[in-house]
Every structure is written in structure tokens, then in C-alpha cells.
Length: 177
Image 1 (cartoon, rainbow, N blue to C red):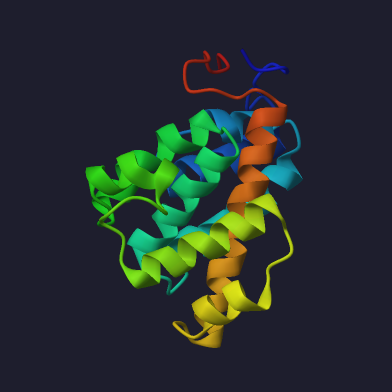
Image 2: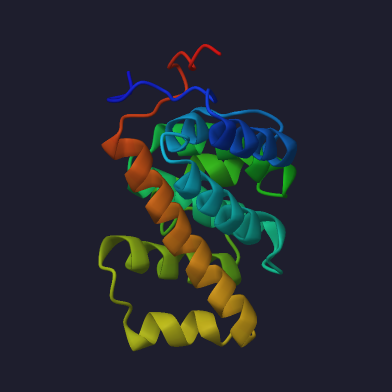
């Protein structure tokens, strides 16, 4: 159960932001219901995550693999629940999703995926990235995609930390409107 009640879109500002969220995401998910406690934060969050997920040139399978790995490393079950179906639609296999926990020992990951996963792990676990790991991944992507990859890893670390601090989970009951 979430540590705070989910916010209702019960003010003009919240209603406006909630309508935009529904338009862009299809529903008012638990994450956004919590964010609505601060409509400006919810709106900024939506804009940032829309840029990461829908306007980036990073291939969708790599983006979702990063999101799923961050969710796993941070124990963010809600994030994983939301993104597993997207990861499959974007081209990850069920075998890859199943092996993500122990990707270093698993088969089924390409050299590019392994470099991205090593970068994801280091950014998430240690924050500082060694030259060796950075050089390996940056050799595979143009500068713009390196920025997008780095921003994706950073963004979904932000998401998982928010979710877990407030204990937002898929089985929670949403706010009643």
C-alpha cells in the first residue's frame, strides 16, 4: 500500500494535467496519480518521460532493456510490471527478460546489449562510470544517442526511487474520482 493516498484530479490544475496524462498515456496510472499531489511536478515529469520514451532515437528494445534492468536493480516491481509488456512489444524476448537478473552469465544478449547493460549497472550501482565501461558503450553510439541512453538510465533510476520511497505498487487501489 502506498505511503500517501493517491491524489484525485479535483482541482482545475490537477484536472488539466490529468487530462493531458490520459491523452498521452491512455490512463491515469498509479505513478501519475501520486504525482498529481503536485500538478507542476506531474506535468514536468510527464514532459521529461515523454521525451525519453517517445522522442528519443534510441532503439526501443535497448530503451526498454535499460528500464527493466534499472527496475530489477532497484527492486521496483511497479516499474517492471508496467514495462515488461512494452519491452516485449519493442523487441526484447521473454528469454532476455527472464535472464536480465544474471545477464553476465546468460546467453541471448548481443555485444551491444552487454555494453549497454554494463553501463546501466555501473550508473545505477556506483553512479560514477569507469572510462573502460564508458568507452566501450560510447564507441557504439553517436553522441546524441549516448545522451539519450544516459538520460534514460538516469530517468528510470529517478522513477524507481520515487516509486519505492512512496511504496507505489500495481496492486494498489487507485484514487476514486
